[in-house]
Length: 345
Image (tube, rainbow, N blue to C red; front, side, top):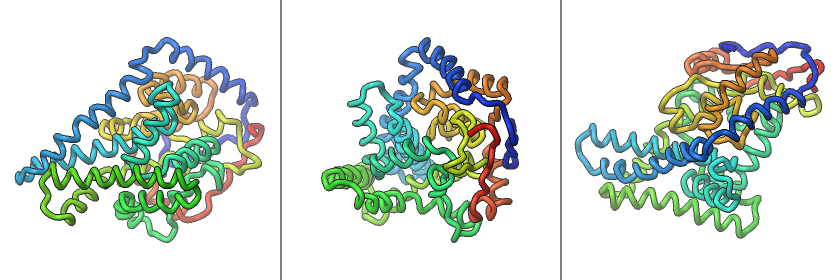
């Protein structure tokens, strides 16, 4: 289903949401069961490993006075940064990188706190326990944290993304007031380690002569893909049906109605992951699958939803961007209307 306008859901539909979900789960589990470790975890681990291995090349490119080489260094570091902080943190938050609980915890701390400069506990709570459990339920998992009604459409869409590299660690520090002292100290130490390591490498490996230029380069690389990151987070949920807590639909209907896949974009597929870009519906239905497995089960999920006459929302990045610019007040400023679905609660 191609979406350029918010979908108007059917007012009634057949019951049996739990049975439908179980049926789909069996089909997806069959695909997972016949997949190798490489398909289930290896592909995404390899992408993350390549991003780590490419970092020295990026830092060394910044030593050159040649503008093209310098720009290549910024690009390498920026793409690697977002691959580690978005793709890595997202997979680690869902425990999708490994089947070991111990290593899942280690990767969660590394990608979320060291690389992203955020708190692991609040990333897990806000994303997994709230957004995924209550997708598009107003006041719980409705992506309202991304709304800034005080900003007009052009400031929000074009300038606000530059605030993300600065706002992320500041929000993390503010959230530490709500955790135990030991957890707060650990998070502060790991965030400081990540930020200082980036700064130190720019001074000692890239050859920056003064702190201000190193900090400016840190900001530049950490904001390279900030615009698509912010946009993707609002494009895939806001503008779709929203539900109330006491009248929300069954899980399969909630996810098929309230989640949207974007068309594949090579750079964003690599840096953000398929589960965030082109397989977001699949990810919300099966959040513990890796990016590569979401892509593998995509034909199964899309065919199943269409055969059962359930929505399967898809649209392009450009179409959603134009839609949000045109209807910014409705989507990002006004309170979202509640969708009532007869027979799906």
